[in-house]
Length: 463
Picture 1: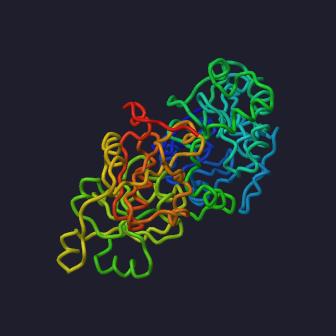
Picture 2: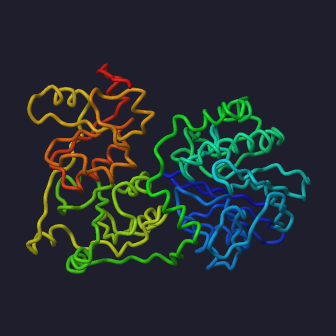
C-alpha cells in the first residue's frame, strides 16, 4: 500500500494519493486544481490513477477532478446526494471500491454537507479491518466540519445530521483508526482546525470538542455558534463543483505588453497587483487591487474581485505566474488573461498615470488618537462576523462583515476616513484593499485587530 498526503498553504486543503503498488493502481481523493503533482507522484511509484473520489462537493475550493480525469481516463466518484450535473459514478453508503489489494469502503457521513462520505481503507494483505479513514470535511484534527456552507437555512438540520454521524459512525470505529482529514489549519471549513495534519480516532475521542458527549439539540447549538467568516465566493464555487469544473489544462505564461494590457482594461479587465506592499506603496497603477502573493491570496480574492472578471496580473517575479493562476483558479477565478510584462517605468514613459501611497497601517493607539479628534475622525468598520462583534468591539464601530462588504460598500462615504478592523489584522487587509479599489480617499488598517486593541487596554464595547 502507498499513501501520500498533499497540502495547500493558506486555504489548508488536504488531498491524498492512495495506491496498491502490487497491482499498480491508485485513487486520488479530493484533488486540487493543480493536478500535475498527483501525476508525478503516481508515475514515481509506478501507479496508474484509476479512481478520483470526492468526499463531497467543496465550497471553499474548485476541484481538479475533471482535469485529472482528462489526463488519466479515471472515473470520478461522488455520493448520489450530490446531484452532480456532469459525468460521474454514483456512490452509496456501504459500497466498496477495490484497488488491487485495497478495499475503499464508503460510509455516508452527512453533516458538513448532505452528500459527505468517509472512505475507510483496508489493506487486505495485512488485515480485513479498515485502519484508515479519509474523512473529508466531516472530522478534522480538533474539530468537525461546519454545517452552514450549504446555506444558513440548512445549518441546524445539517448540524443534527453531523451529531448522528459522529456518534453512530465515527465513535464506533476502533481507537487506532488513523484519521486523515480533508483540511488542516488555515481552512474556513471548521472553527479551529488543528495544525497537525493527521490524528487517531482514540485521541480525538478524548480531546476533540465536537466528539464530547452532547444531546442532539446541544450539539446543534454548539455547531452553529461562533462560526468564522464564510469563504468568499463559496456559493459560486459549490455551483462550479456541482456542474463540473472546466478543465484548465496546462498553464502557460501569458506576458502582455503595456498596449495589450490597456486593450484588456478597455474590455473591462481588472488589474490585480500581487507585488509586495513596499513595491506597491512606492508606485502603482491607479485603480489596481492590491493583494500580495502570499498564502491567504486564495481566501481574500473572493472578497475584492468579481469571479467573472477578466484579470491582468502584476507580479514581482514572472516565475510566480503559474502558481498565481492556480491560486486564483482554486477559488473559481479562471479568467486570467495574462500578466503585465512591461515595467512601471515603461508604463510611465508612455505618459500613463502612476500613483504612490497605500492604505495606511496604524497601531491601535494611533486609532485611539484619531478617534479623539474633532475633524477627520474616521468611521471604524468592523469586518468580523456578528458573533465576534458582539463579544467586544471598538466603541461606535459599524459592523459589516468581510463577506458583506462588497455589496454594502454604498453605505459608506468614500470621502470620510475609514478605519478597518478585524480580529488580528488579516481580514481587514482584504477589506482595505476593496475600499482602496472603490476609490475611498483615506483608509486605515488596524494592525493586530481587536486582539491588539483589547490587549492594549483600550475600551471595548459589548452588545
